[in-house]
Structure formats: C-alpha cells, structure tokens
Image (cartoon, rainbow, N blue to C red; front, side, top):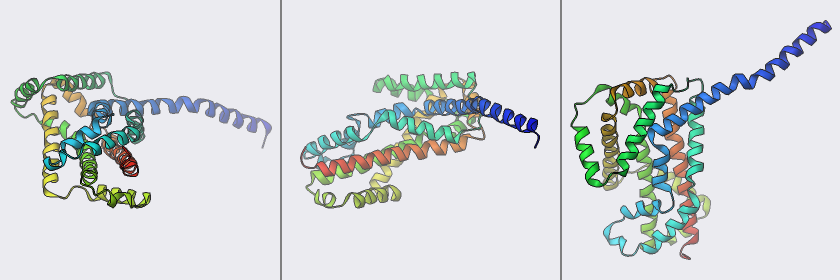
Length: 288
C-alpha cells in the first residue's frame, strides 16, 4: 500500500478518534436531560426521600402495625430505624435510578424548553400540595377533581409511573413492618437462625411473590388508587398547553423503555437496600 494511503488512513482515524467524544457527548447529554426531567416529573427524589430518609422507614412501618403490636414494638422500631439509616442512601439510589433511565433513553431528543417549563410547573404544584395542611389538601383535591374528565390528562396519567412506584414503597413498608412484628412478638429465632444467603433468598421470594393476603392487598389497592387520584388532581391544575407538551414528550419512541427502566430500577434500589436493612436488623437484634 502506498505510503500516502497509509498516512491518509492514519490521519482520518486520528481525526475520528478526536471527534468521537464530541459526537457522543450530545447523545449522552440528551439522555441525561431526559432522565432528569422524567425523574422530576414523577417526583422520584422527593418520593424516595420521603419514604427512605432517616426516620421515614420506621415511621411508615409503624403505621402498618396492628394495634396489638404497637405497645411492644418500640424497641423493634428503634432497631429498624438504626438499620435503615445504615442501609438506605437516598442520593446514591436516585443517581443509580437516573443512570438506568438515561441508558434506556439514549437516542431520544432532549426535552425542549416547553417540556422543561411544564415539568417545573408540575413539580412546583406537587411541592405546594405537599406543603398544605390537611384542610388545604382536601380543598384543592375537591376543587380539581370536580373538573370534567379530560382525555389528554387521562392519557398522560396512564403514561406516568406514580402508581407503580407507590406499590413498590408500600410493598417495602409491609415487608419491613412484618419483620418488626415478628421481633416484637419474640419470634426473632426464625430470622436469626438463617444464614445470610438463605435470609436474602427469603426476602427475594417475598418480593417475587408479591402481596397476596387479602387485607394488605386491599390496602395496596387503596394506596395505588389514592396516588392516582392525587396525581390526577395535580394534572387538572396544570395548564392545557403544559399537558399537551408533556403528553407529546411521553409518547416519544423512548418513553416506554424509560418508564420501564424507572420502575425497574426504583424497585431494585428499594428491594436491595431493604434486604440490607433486614439483614442488619436481624443480625443486630436484640443488642439495640
């Protein structure tokens, strides 16, 4: 091969390698922008913090205890609080979820200015609602839910993952509260005698099986529906132009894969951290 041809190929190869990061960077940035906007739309960071920040896990587990267990569960709840604080890392989990969503959204266009503005307005609506007292929330809910059903808002709600994420949170709360009940009732032996691997497999089986008991299943159905109803009220308060922009965005070719990645990674983070919390709780019991 002529020396000039070799030199030419080397030049173009070197040029390609030089420009490759510049070619890849916009696609990576677009995927990250999409993921960040989706997490904000779904309220993932606020949701994860509310459910798994220090003190939140034991608080939610306490709410699911039966009256007969409340009087004796104080020590077990205190132990769960300490174990959960060591196991759940809100910032790390949210970052991991965003990375999974970004990987699923590669190739999609970055959200436009209208979408970003709509996401910001919806996020503010959610934060304002969360800051209201019970009377304010009820008044807002009644006012917005009284508006006629709107096909665009109904379709956008169907594209969102809020109910599925709430199911993950409720399943975790139920599992952790069940462990607390057994410890409070003096049945710690059924956990402490298990090797780590067996204990992890038992937790994995419980997650795979899902909630089957009638009362918890009914509570889960209520939790999912309440999440949907509140989100529907928030969407009703959003301007029509914002709803149209968000719906068009969530009908992108990448949207379904991003939603699946969001739910899957959220579940994986909660499940994994919860399993560590249970193992830490059981192995430390009853030294708290």
